[in-house]
Length: 188
Image (cartoon, rainbow, N blue to C red; front, side, top):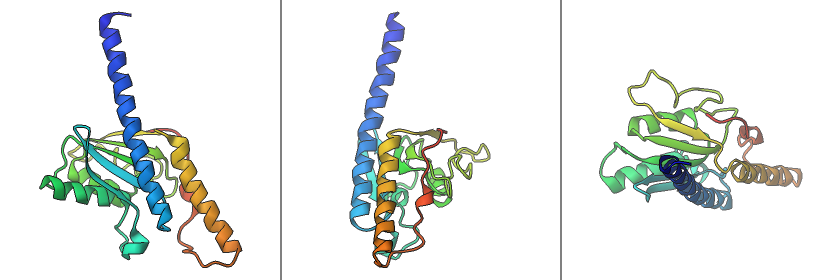
């Protein structure tokens, strides 16, 4: 191995370690959503290895259909940075963004999106729609999927299994939350 190859390996390894650190943080935010009875999705927006925004799903608690984890993280970051353009940032999210979130990510000029599980019902990074990947936008986003795929999918599967059990026990649950919204398929 040449010194250039060694440096490249170290850079890739360092990037992976950084990605894992922030996706684990997104998973803790997803767990917070689950504790609140929301679909367990967490998101963290990072710039220069620092959190600039974070969020978890809260549409039920907030009576707000736009209160997705990604939107919360983008709003917090824009406020913190004093700019709606979130240049040179990476968004880590446990589930593939939907069309609404993908549009916001594009308009915010996020540089990179890393997500765990695919969403075969509403995913907008290749599963159903290609919103994040479209070359029609004047802003291109680097999109990577499958990071911590198993724990990202497991928290969602566990949440929906608990909901099914509650439904069988006669406990009223929000029927619009559907377990089929998770897939552990291929990457971007």
